[in-house]
Image (cartoon, rainbow, N blue to C red; front, side, top):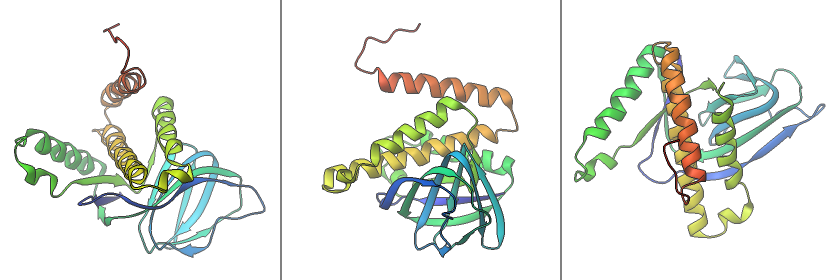
Length: 217
């Protein structure tokens, strides 16, 4: 499968972040991308030809297009999706699902085991994202959509502080998507996906109620 290695030696540089609603007869753009683009489809379907290959996206699909990719619509259909145009060092990598799982798992374990006093661990932060991944867990999809929606208002790009905040939220979004991929390709292990789903729900609850007295119930 195709995945992309994204290097974050600096902040995620974002040029566009918004939502789109394609309604026939308006088609998707025909273009060569001048930035990296992430799509998150929430409703309908989006059929594209990318670099000569057919790509059928449906609700719950997340797709990453590297800078320089050619896109053109295969058919006109109603579709709602969010998009993020960003600049980063993106490298295509062709590996199996098993290799992807092992790569992400070993990378995160190596980072976690490094000394907290070793600042070199921050020099080459990498995230591996599948070119296309489907999010079947409803709570996970809703969480990602809420994260993107909070970044959309134009005023978020009008001050340095707000822009840095959006960049940080997008970086967290990419890290969350990597976790989704790790769970999805974890030896095809349904238990692994179930554990991740439970962890997602706990993390979402804590994020929303962190000011409250949270017990173990």
